[in-house]
Image (cartoon, rainbow, N blue to C red; front, side, top):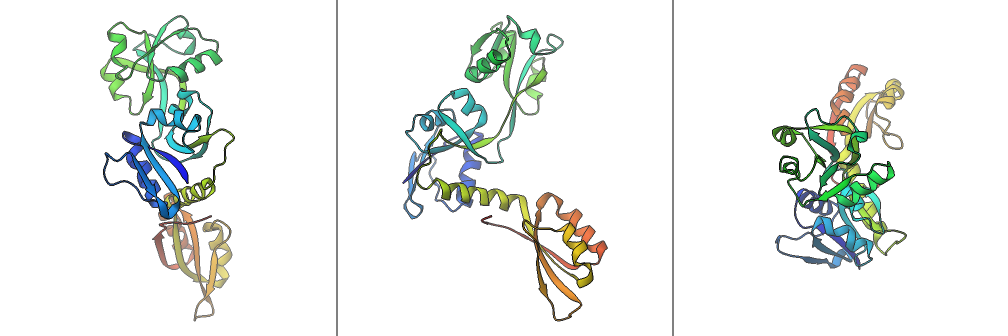
Length: 280
């Protein structure tokens, strides 16, 4: 039975459970439930703190898990990225008092507060910067004002919290993070291939829609350049022998532009359907 770690709370939790449900797996209804078995799919879910998931997977206690790239790198364990899941995007950056820092070189000999001390120490060491890293569990923005640190390294979304604290972002991003499916390095447990295939199917279903339209036969080649599909579009005859029906998957973000261009080309009865699940 495949043993999977799932975030039990925080920004990763709800999205991770929703994705697993879309992939056809049972998920818990009671947030206090810590372990749940899905016997139909031969899989067992363990709901854990996101920061601990990489540790359990890296030690081999659990087979795979869902966590952030930042948390995986911060843990510094024998685990690796198996699949990027497309949610919980964030950027890890340096910030300091307005006008105090311009780049990484200004951090030499300074004190840096962060909740990701492992990740930060590795980043600084690889770039030859010697600085004192102060680990805090949260609210690192206050550390400079309170005299604990000279600058911070933290996950930044809008930057509004930093501005309110009189700070600004500087330097290049340390890391761009998102949710991942991770596994123990070099390990391929039974059932992992099915889980990966299902999650990849969810990712494709979220990114594409199914487009159907009617068009004259002599325009099919031009229409196919607009809707090439993943392999090639499906073309079916209609009762009127001069026309055909075309079906293809198209990127969801381009839906309305493609519909406009197809209409200008001469396509009619253009319909769009959501894709709930797929295997590519």
